[in-house]
Image 1: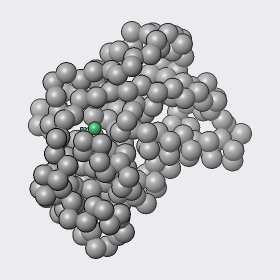
Image 2: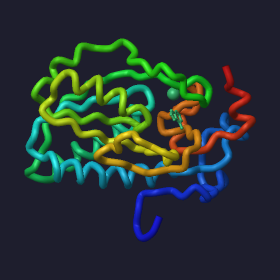
Image 3: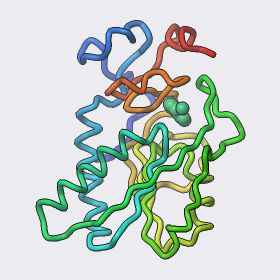
Image 4: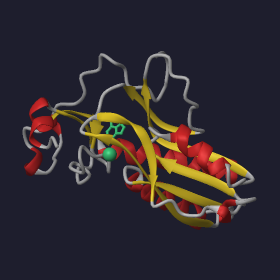
Length: 212
Ligand code: HPA
Ligand code: MG
């Protein structure tokens, strides 16, 4: 990566855990901090502005992708609300939720499925913003397209740099990161680590401790 970009290089070792605070119940379970919480918030603020510039004055339906996307979605919606209060451009938003599940331990299981799928026919003709962490967008996009929204925009907090990635990129990307399993900021390992603010790399002993 050259110049300014939102990309975290493969050889970047991350921040030492000693530089930040995190819950004591996770000591020993983490290797490093990849994205500190404050940086996520700053980036989210900018994404909110970009979304506002592109979609301001449209009514939008926000589709929050659970579970890993709940924090990003909440913070992004929050920033968009703040911008709506401080300017004469606003975005009326309705927020819906959809739940996907694909991971056991740190492995992607083949069958990504939509849990408790709701009828999304209310999306027909609407501008839809899908907000998630960015990992499972392809399947979801196909699912959502079937309900014929007028326009679909995807905001993903993270895009992993994987070899031969044919997946479509989200319209709004928070960060591009190395292809490593990360936790925190609502991303889990077997439901643990959602209560961690920073995005971190889990340690081998952390993987063992919470393995199913
Ligand atoms: N962390 C947590 N959940 C995930 C990840 C990850 O890195 N990738 C896909 N699902
Ligand atoms: Mg998960």
